Length: 399
Ligand code: PMT
Image (cartoon, rainbow, N blue to C red; front, top):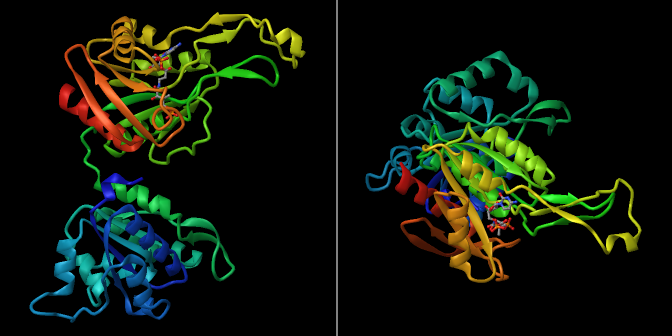
């Protein structure tokens, strides 16, 4: 999900090269995300793929003529004004050389020269010897100094059979970077610590007890804060989720003791701390390295794990914002308010985990934000959107 690309005017400039077919996939994704794309192509790009393919896949207009002035509508100035984001993908050594030197002899290069906004992204893709040629590297350096964001090509086997740097990167990488460029940076210089996922307590060599949690809620929070400029540290229990590339610092832990140690180590460095993880309240008293026989499991002895959030509530300083989640099935508000008070939180986020359509394991959540002064209900939505509301709440109330 890329909420900040939705309804944005995105101009995809395409130059030639075998990787051009991947730009079709990028365009298709932009359309599905709900962005508003348009395409411009170099003449050489058209000898690889017809403009009609781009037009059909993107359900959008495709331009390639610089002098196609209609009724005073001048393509390169109008398109450069229209776009919120300019992406050049794939970018050949030729187009890189032209743009870095201000040459404007076709629609792609003249639109790039006329484009004066900050959100501009270029994806160099070519043979490794061309990429590593000092002239190309120096042109890329110039582009970087001119404010272009460059997504470096990947290493691997190239179309001509050579191996090296020059491959078109994963389109997800381009989308993540695009989203970053279009997201407001209201959490710049803020440090945020987020925990996510369950903790797992071993019973023996093969068995364990744990709490339900996919980690999605915490990961979406970590992404949202990162997109909005915060320096995020994510401490995650075991999950099946891929590490989000936008989150720069992530630690993986297994059990509650490990999570506690890591959280306590990071706690003082952070301005905002959010415990969204489903921490196991108990651990096994006599954990066995061997697989236990069935009969000896029936009388498992448990002991209490530390309450990490409560400990943070005792240690927190006045400038820190401490936030907990309350996963409840009954007496929702009453229980949440009790946790808010007992754990000395700035606010608590209540979710009803008795429902199957929100809470654990699913894409959506529905929450109430409860502080000492107020309660705010946020309707059911994708967890990323919910994370956005939580960020907005913090920004509005605390900064
Ligand atoms: O991961 P998902 O599948 O996306 O699901 C999200 C979620 C439902 C797990 C999440 O939204 C959520 O509710 N997380 C909190 C789960 C929980 O353990 O709630 P609790 O009410 O038992 O605990 C209250 C708070 O104390 C929580 O912030 C918890 O992290 C913390 N806690 C609890 C026990 C403990 N020993 N130490 C703690 O720090």
